[in-house]
Amino acid sequence: MRSFLKIFLATLLALVVFSLIAFFFIAGMAGSAVSSSMPVLSEKSVLKIDLADAYVELPQSDLQSMVQSQKLEETPSLYDFIRLIKKAKTDEKIKAIYLVANGNVNGFASSEEMRRALEDFRKSGKPVIAYGNTMTQKAYSVANVADKVYVSPAGAFEWVGFRVSYLFLKGALDKLDIRPQIFYAGKFKSATEPLRAEKMTEANQLQTSVWLNDLYGDFLQKTATARKLDTASLHQWANTGVITTPQVAAGYKLIDGVRYDDQLQTELKKTLKIDSSNKINFISMGQYARLHTNLGGSGDKIALIYAAGNIVDGNKQEGVISDGEYIDLLRKARLDQSIKAVVVRVNSGGGSALASDNIWREMKMAKAVKPVIVSFGDVAASGGYYMSCAADSIFALPNTITGSIGVFGIIPDISAFMKNKLGVTFDGVGTGPLANAGAADHPMTPQEQKIVQGSIERVYDQFKARVAEGRKKDTAYVETIAQGRVWTGFRAKDIGLIDRWGGLQDAINAAARMAKLSEFRVKEYPNYSSLLERILRIKNNGDAESMVKNELGSEYARVYQQLRTVKQMTNSVQARLPFEFFINAQQ
Image 1 (cartoon, one colour):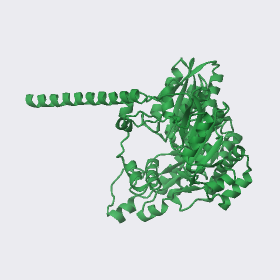
Image 2 (spheres, rainbow, N blue to C red; image 1 turned 60 degrees about the vertical axis):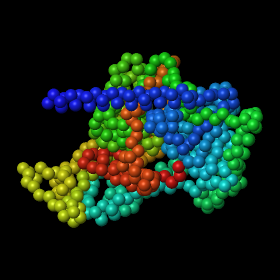
Image 3 (cartoon, rainbow, N blue to C red; image 1 turned 90 degrees about the horizontal axis):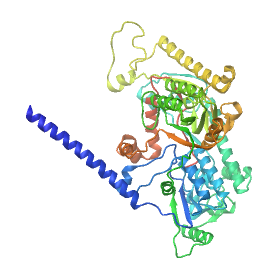
Image 4 (cartoon, rainbow, N blue to C red; image 1 turned 180 degrees about the vertical axis):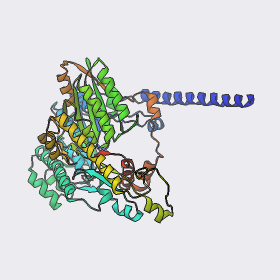
């Protein structure tokens, strides 16, 4: 026994020592990467922005790749992007912005916030130059604000219009003998359509065509304004497919010309009066962020709480809005006397109705003691709207997706699948007819179905009541704009779902005015800024989702992701967006 303890303690000590050595080794490498690769901001520098980078709500960093390359490069958050562009506007060393516009992975509302920041930068008199080898419509939706837009002569320029594609799983479930047993409230609540239909219902076709054309119309209008064209011609060119090459696009004045990269850099050197033999000092957004780490401001505190991802029950989980974590964050902000106002940035298609209600309750309590402003990102719908409707004021952009006030539930019946495909059957005894209610081993009885549908209706009524109270509307009116229908921010303002059009900075400024703050600093939550937390959050590239994406590509990986979502939706009442949609504006 004594020998065992000696071996055990020695092994434990070795593991502790090894872990400490590994930690300090990684920290040392990261530290040396910081010191060895600190960017130099020289005179006549050009800020380089790549739309292929995702500027999401919280800063993203892949420490694993940083350590391997010994280069510390972090993609700033969307709010940091906006603040950095504002700083570059008055930075004497930044003379221009070079926008790499091949594809754009950012959402429509996020892209609009980026576009507005670039538009404001141009007021300084400094040029914004956009360039792409193959420029997609989504990239062009940001690039068209530039002073000059160029595409490679051998590249491509996309101008074909927008399309939404939905993925339907009913046929696969039928082949597998799986019955989803679906319950929902609201005729537009199409979250269950991929499980119960093989194509879009008429109601879903109606709502989708409306919000898609809102997004497309906004794109055409901004293009027409920026390029001094008319929307009717832009629409006709997309329908007829007349824009076939970058040269044709230049002829129709959608872009300013075709250039190779070296030609563009030569032109840029002349503009900035840089000697032709010298290199342009390009500074990436990540590098510029490292030179300006204090963007929070000074004065009284405004809490900025990021709520991004699916809404789920339980404690802290990365990448989702878990009610346990967000109740705690809101409660701390409410009780902290140094925090004078709260801004919640919501980017979520919803999820658990129970978790949404729990967060709604904490939002309401915070509103009772200090200003609470909500800013909607790309999507703030269903549960994302539920948790937000208690706020003093809601900001969104015209191309934000919101609404979807409705709920649903799914209880699968896998008995036929187990019997016909695997030869497995179920049997048992119970104390009453409802003892096995909700189990997946049998078709639901009419009594069970009635109970579940009643639960769905009660949650839906509660959802509408929360909206009516928060938006100061009659419940009968809320029913006319509810029914699970999806709206754009453009229409949401007219029907009273939001208060103002504006981005995140607009919402923060409004919170400062409500709190009567002349100066303020923004404190962001949740905070994952420590090195240890980043080490612990290193992404595992061997997880199932990454492997599917690597093997099958992004399109087929979406099928896997949607199957995972279906699994998450079962056996609980959901306040979630219709279902995952893919807008073919190309990334």
